[in-house]
Image 1 (cartoon, rainbow, N blue to C red):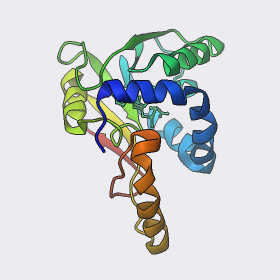
Image 2: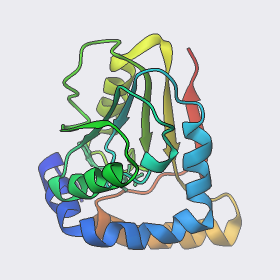
Image 3: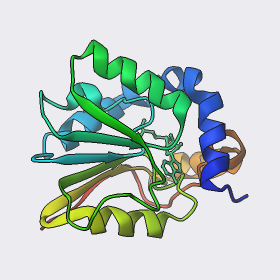
Length: 183
Ligand SMILES: C[S@@+](CC[C@H](N)C(=O)[O-])C[C@H]1O[C@@H](n2cnc3c(N)ncnc32)[C@H](O)[C@@H]1O
């Protein structure tokens, strides 16, 4: 099943209310810690791509020049409220991750979490993240995939069959990992 960016925006608008509740489970099981650890590496001017409801916002120390990019209004409203509660200065913008409206080399850090399996054209989105990152900067990605623990991997493979219709996501084949592209 293949979704367009517009389909996904509509889908995640509908999911906005439930997203934090459902994602609270993996966050409690360790994803929140991975978000925090990876964001400790973020510096300078930061772009977060597909920020969703702003689950990463608590891990940005008081910084300026943070821009969060997202495609869906419903989730962005939640992210705005979160930023307000944290007194963070964030410039939000609705934008397709596959066509970022920034010049080449605009940011020191480009960050995205749990998104690559959702983008209709993940290669294009990754190319865009690389393009808008400065040559001395870093692209930081928090992504997930299949466990190499036998029973768990099989369970995840079986479970991911229902994912495209519920979340727009497709499965990936590697385990939970932190990835970064050094300068
Ligand atoms: C699983 S959610 C992750 C949200 C957030 N990054 C987080 O860590 O909670 C995947 C997000 O990617 C967004 N998305 C999918 N395609 C997109 C696109 N082409 N441009 C921008 N965002 C997109 C979806 O709307 C969804 O909010």
